[in-house]
Image (cartoon, rainbow, N blue to C red; front, side, top):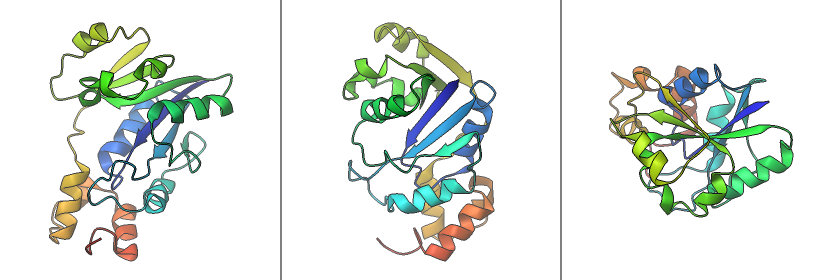
Length: 188
């Protein structure tokens, strides 16, 4: 089976994340979403349990929300852990093109390259240049239109009570969860 691994802070889950997952299911049998802990001390990062709960609205037999590997500090550790569970499956790490630029700064990036990469084309980045630079052998470049949504912008609009565009950015279920749990709307 071809299994995608989508690792990120997802702070919050927005329509761009959902669109990526839905589009990539055309190429993959299932996608494992791994919201990460706060080991990088990101500003405004809410507790991982909330980010897991937001993803659960979209979980099904093809979208699996990982609740076991969230506090592993490095992506290669997440992939190694998942490979132990999905022994006979092909793991495909899903990253944005903006992440490929500094891929050699990722801890043990060579270990990550034992798996396939699915690179989401964005920001006019010359992906082929970086594929050659880092000697990436197993990859797929995917173009997905209209995913220029930033979690930072979503948080800012929520904190500033600017709700006019919010439903273009996040699903109503996510908005309702944010309001109910009062995440992002109050100072952390």
